[in-house]
Length: 361
Image (cartoon, rainbow, N blue to C red; front, side, top):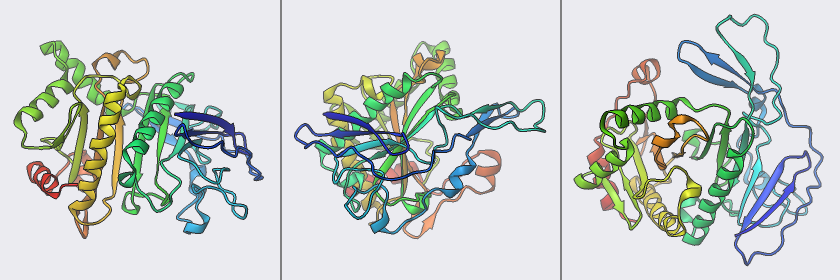
């Protein structure tokens, strides 16, 4: 992998991740850009014991531009984008409209209740462009290119985890307008949070309690149980298993677990990374074949927190979830889900797994 770092016109970092045979990239950004906002703040909800990030400047972020004005496509002499080069394999850059920033100063907020703490939203938000091809998708990448994305995730996880104040690194992909994606170019993001997220705190708290009761790892037991049953396994390989969890919340939900327990993406071996790329592409194509349409989804990597004591109970895994419950129907978070956090699903996990197995790739 060839790694080339530079800066955009407003000082944001950009990093090219190329195959070894790739040519040198154009690094100069000729645009004139306004400074990036540093006003992000976060407030603590004392009732739920959760941090909420406020980034009002994101209301003005780029929203569904026409294809010929896509900011994630390579630059041309007539159209300068976020990527100065005329081509690229994979590229990462700091988000121009970040929810979190290492330069965040927040704002003094008069009148907050005494129990509500406010802080600058220190952290970092990066955009990961999977390919220069605007009309592609992760599912259409070749295995060697998908492996390059995995190596990119590993590189950025290590780099972001080393930043002062970062507590958790979260690579993810939002795909499809139904999910809320505002840019059609195939891309994902990485958030470096200054706190351990509520979902991770709950999972790792349960894993710690399970270990104290049994001496075993909760995630490893879940994987073992699904592999032994096989009813919800979509596909398996030498190093990974993809399955629909028995208590899936979403109409389509697939979890990807490595057979060897590791804490984060950088800990994966070359063989495990290669194997994941092949298996992931297979499942993504099955997902697109489920309703014979590009499935909208969120792909979320669950990695161990950077230094939290709960880190030792973590187990790296990827969760892909979709709100598409039928070709023409979406799953909305209505009263029970939004008000109480109690999910009600209209489909059986076993039925979804069987359909994905029969769909093939």
